[in-house]
Image (cartoon, rainbow, N blue to C red; front, side, top):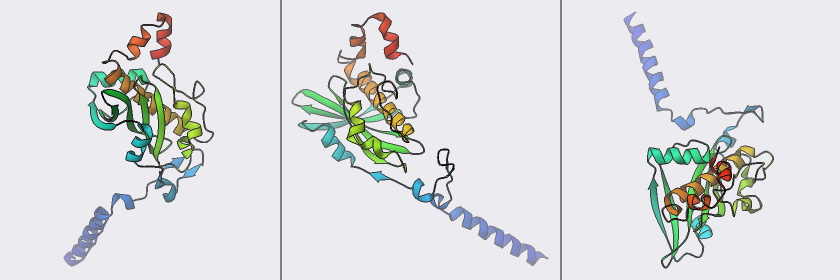
Length: 229
């Protein structure tokens, strides 16, 4: 009897050890797609289309700068709350890297890499902002969804150029949607807005050329449409 119990215990222990040693990546991940009415395949879940590296994107977004330096901005909880209020959504990050392009003593612009979730997975892209706080470029670095990579095409993301914190940057307002890629469009639009607000709060306002200075020149009745959500 005891030998029988030992055999059962040994089999249980081996089975448990095998389960614990199976890597997480090998365990089946099931993600339901409401549009497709099915679970995504393994190939769709592991899809990643690389458009360019971060270094390549910096050269495109800040092409004329004599030098480019990188610094990290840290968000206090109060500053994070303020930015979330301005953009209308909450995010987990408390720090962001910023590329600053300079020529002589002049700042040419800023660039930030952001990751925001599309339909199921995060996309990685760089947003360029000129010295006056206007979006100068958007470049898609990595797209991880099976559909919707059209957001990386210039004929689409060119519509972000010229936008500032005073613009809504929303579908059906000042951004044209892509059929079948609505979540990706919303995601990248939200990211562009966040970059513009971060640059405004950390660089332009301290220099006296931020949205608060511009807003002071507007009619008071116009302010809720700028900052309200």
